[in-house]
Image (cartoon, rainbow, N blue to C red; front, side, top):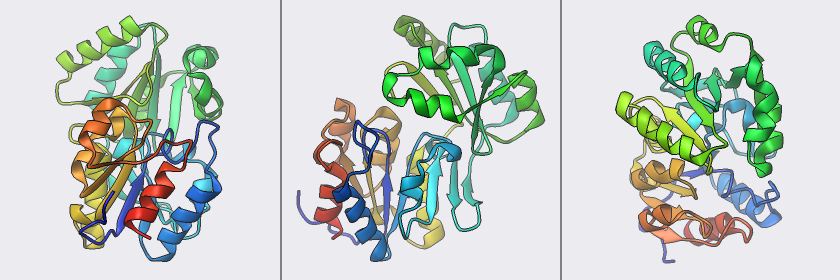
Amino acid sequence: MSACPYPIRIIGLDLDGTVFNDQKEITPRTLAAIEAAAAKGIVVLPATGRPASGVPKEFLAIPGVDYALTSNGATITRLSDGEPVVFMPFDTPTALGLYDLLDPIDCICNVFIDGQSYTPERNAHLLEEFAPANIRAYIKDTRRKVKDLRQYILDHEGRVEKVVAMFQDLEQRRRTWELIAEKFPQVEITSSFENNIELNAHGVHKGAALLALAKELGCGAENIMACGDNSNDLAMLQSVGLSVAMGNAEESIKETAKFITDDNNHDGVAKAIEQFVL
């Protein structure tokens, strides 16, 4: 890796598979690198598909971390006052249409509203069965149960940030992905692990949110560095000036990124920050 030609003012970091190792820990070296970048006045923020309630406190507690990008970019929140500086939700008819498509299918549907994740009460007991082992505890701890999720969407008009579906049958997942793409061609479709589908409003992704934040802060794409590993990071890496793929990233991510760092179990994020920022 060579030196960055533009000054980095914003660093967007995916969490799972990027900042966090496979034990869901931030290693001391990675923590020190993030703290050092923030101490230089660089805006370092989590850029995650999780809802705001699911962002690990150990990242939010890092001195100098002032923003959090959540729900794949539907929201960027200023942590000092909890106010959104970027908010790009679904329109209610599209959110309802997606829910109605997913509800009869053999999957677990979750809807992110106002920083929380909601799931139908009747399916809540299946969450642990559908969730991958390495994030099972996170899924269980962050999903709120509602009796009628469709009505809950209606009651929170214009507040749906993201819709997620988890599958046990990967062939069912493939067919559902194709059906959504056919019925809702305007919707952004990604995933963050093998058996899920993540849905955002048209044009909403981590990259769009980072660019909106950069505009708010008076800088451009060339001043943004981003690190990621999965398909919901693809648009982010395509949008920023300095894109870094983790060593454990999907091949499509590695092919897109300008640089490839080490994997998430060997301080890949720390090495990228040390090289380009510190």
